[in-house]
Image (cartoon, rainbow, N blue to C red; front, top):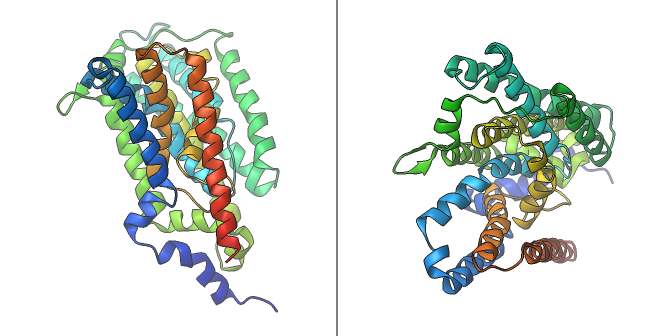
Length: 347
């Protein structure tokens, strides 16, 4: 018996439309992962209260996670559609390189003394560079129907290689001083780092887009059942193209933020950002099978490795244990998601 369009539409709308805004913001698995984060903070605070529970420590945590958080917001949209993007780290590097080279070209080879006019053009260049890679990913995945894993694995290498080619394998270290002092290390609103403010604003916009708009509803629908979404009138191809475009756009912004903070393109510092963004998103409760996830969960997932690393450093525990702990939390998050799916499917 065939399914009618209204029935399919009802199925697509059900989980999203019948839940309150708060339920959508929090997500199905966020409570448990939040408990893990709170427990980690409590443990490290008890072990080293004078070193860990300080304003400086939490400011540092916020700054260090800002760039990864922006990447992870984009990754949340991708994974909810049941996709993956391995290229975001390389796209970040490429976007930062394009930004740096553009500012250098406009400043006669040395951008250290450049002003906000040059910086604005550099920002536009970074965003365009990231968006173009997002467009390439989206076209190959949505239109050419190539699996996301293969496409983004290929563009991961291509974007990184292109970044190396732009400056003969070297980092760009000529960055406007005013950019580094203002966005990179500057503070406002009672001492809150400007870099953190940018990340928070982007995260809030991402949460609004995912949890309150038609775009977000379609994102969940495509991830839950792409064929049902297509039959209900959703342009799945076009929507997937937009999702990967958004991810590339955010990677471009992250590249600009990284350049501002490090005053260099720091190629080697971002080679694992793609895996870190995926891990943070999944730890935050976004299902690798699609259709489930929240931006708030991703925020929590970003902070778990950061808190572990900071806490282990303060308590002088070798960093290798942090890698083991993050791996354990990641596996546990996927295991809980699989149990939830089995319980739902058995009803």
